Image (cartoon, rainbow, N blue to C red; front, side, top):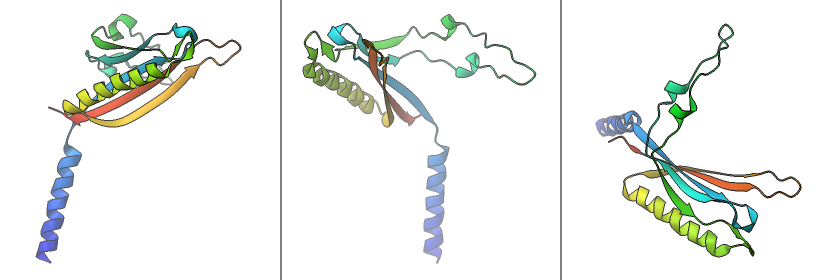
Length: 151
C-alpha cells in the first residue's frame, strides 16, 4: 500500500510540474498564391518583433461603446523573416514542381524550428478565393503553431 501511495504522490508531483510549466508560442505562416498565370506572391512569414495584444485591446460595455483607437502603425510588425515561395500556377497551369519546391522549403523551416527546441503543436489551413465569375484571386494559407517551454 505504501508503494502505491508513493507512486501516486510521485505522479501527482510530476503532473503538477507539467501543468505549472509556462510555454512560449511561435507562429509561422505560409501563404501560397493560387492566382492563375503565376501573378501572385507566395511567402513564408515569421515575426521577429513581439506585440502585447493588451496594448491594442479595448473592452466595450453597455455604458462605454467607444471605438478602439489603436493606431495601425503601432500594431504593425516591421521585424520579420520573409522566405520566398513559388506560386502554384504559371502560364501553363498548375506547376507540381513549384509545389514540391515549396514543400521542401516549408519542411526546412519546420526542421529548423524543431532543432531550436520548438514543438509543432497545431497546424491550421484555409483557402481564400473569390469564387465568382472569372475568379482570378486566391491564396492558400497555413499557420504552423509551435510551442516550447519558456527559456
